[in-house]
Length: 352
Picture 1 (cartoon, one colour):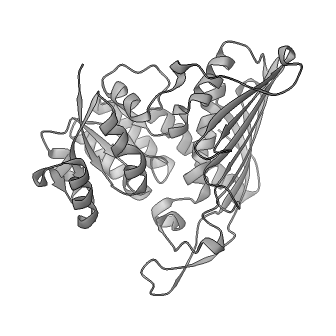
Picture 2 (cartoon, helix red, strand yellow):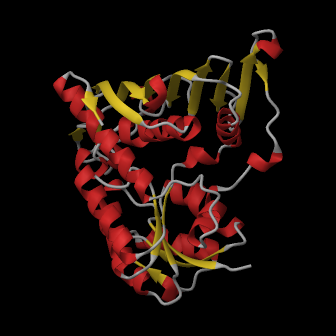
């Protein structure tokens, strides 16, 4: 089996929780280099994953230039996604990047152009495409089991933003680093997931975004800072095929860890996808004539259980099943986010 050598840039929470263990667990990937601006964190991850000191970098340019790195894994804060991915393209190296891919649509468009010009492969980490229940739902819809689709309704709720949690003003609350708040952090996942499962694209959007907690303590304890991004986003959307869609996104939902619920209604059947209704569990229910118009749990076939980072390896090897998100999907998502922000600011619908 061919093995891709990966250099990983940005070693924070999503890296430690998903990327690095996923790379280590994928037999088509080999972790060969690490990069982070925090030298202490870098040393800790290097010791954890057995990466030698001469393959540990605090400057991402050095990791990209490392001859033992075939592809670049980018899991940094949002404000440097674009520049790192552009540098990977300039070096002729394929990459995977966290979402949202850039700070705005202009950056996204230029990254797409650079990726195509360089002829490199790309993947965007829309993680919930790799939930077995979501993949099975997509297959069921493609088979025609739901018939013509009418409605999609999605909730994505977390609770860590509540005042009682005393979370400081981390980068996710700072517009100059994150670009948007709950919208870009959670909403872009929900928007991509609905598009992935239904196979349909968005045609127009309207939205209401708001901030609940306007000030938070600074991480270093030196005072209080302003939150200048959204804490919640409510979105209405029209999709191809006449589908109406609605999204409720918030980081202020008591008792919610990483909760998702998506309902999809067709003229023959309906599906309900759950994530984290029970901690860590993903489920799918169906309602159709055969179930007496009652919602019943579905057993998800083993073939739909996959690893995001193994799929990253397949994408880099040119062996994708076609269900990964590439830079083109990331660009569409970024234009969608910008349209939602504009729709909220102007109080109108925005065509896509």
